[in-house]
Image (cartoon, rainbow, N blue to C red):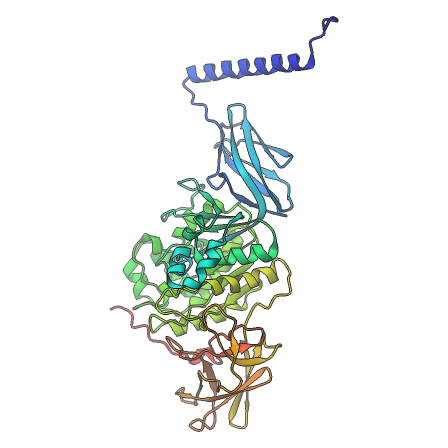
Length: 520
């Protein structure tokens, strides 16, 4: 110090003090001029304990004073952005590998800063639909005590859940009205999570080995329409008419139209929940989506026709809006505990919608349980997880039970061929959470054949390798076959040898006439 040169630490303190003085003076001048100075604000999804998507560039966005420089720091990476004239900004962090260590995400401008603590990098999934997705872990355990030990062992801090409950919006929202809350998984917090999504996350995390976040946007009682982006209501008369009537908020007309839906209020209208729950998150990268819905498109005086069209619009619409053309999308077919005459028809519509790439359907007609909310969401979650592990993690995991492929007419019988039957077919029975048990001496039931007039008759079914032969003495020349086509199928015993059930199906879907008895 005898040379008169100020020490480096002293110099830094002097510089910091001068910067603070300058900023303080700037604040006084701007405040005196009547201008309100706003500290930077992050979008509502960025809160403590969150998970961000690995291996993809990560947009971080929010609002601040126009023209300000915004500095974003996370995991040793620093990026900047300049606030636009409307106060919005977005900075792009580079793609990062999975990391189980919670780290701070910091945002700073000349007017202030914000910190998001305990941020993990892993896989993030959207979970959505209606009440069977919204059904909680606590409700599942109440109806299925065998699931209790799984929940008691759920001390899984690398799994985080975020529940979005926004009400409908006529226009797409730029941000959540209420900031999100990310909750760390424990035996206590898990009880409030979506059961289907929780058991999905538990299995994917266990076998995938990376942190996992779930954003749950489900709402009980809702049809598919409010989740479809309005831009996707095109290319089909039903979609276009629903959007037209929805914009007019003509609830009765939507209910009366062919292929329409019983809209209770604005939360049921086209695009309204996508606007409020998904649109604010459209920049936030995710790994994929899981979906469980359909009940409110086939209830009392509800028309299940054209649901396959709506399902494809949902998938394509989400992919376009979220900027991910091949976004994995896995969904659950309605369970076997049917609640209305439209359930068999809608199950078939769900099967038909599984033809899109990177889309998978989970069959649940074989699971025990009664009512519209059967409690076994453990197997639902595990079957969804199989799709995620195979499609996203590239693991060798069977994903689907037998799916009808084609029929051949031969000597008065129909030979039905199936995809996902390479392991062979079997008659089996599933009880509780145990794996299906083969029943080699039990007849295969649940099949019907149709004659040329379209009348359906019970049929005998025989497994022949990876095919099934069906025939009936009452129908010497059958033209179509169907399986498990009932509100509550009594026997769903066809499996592949990977232990996954066959989907209900009709070999000629056009023969499934349906009268929804629409209101006058």
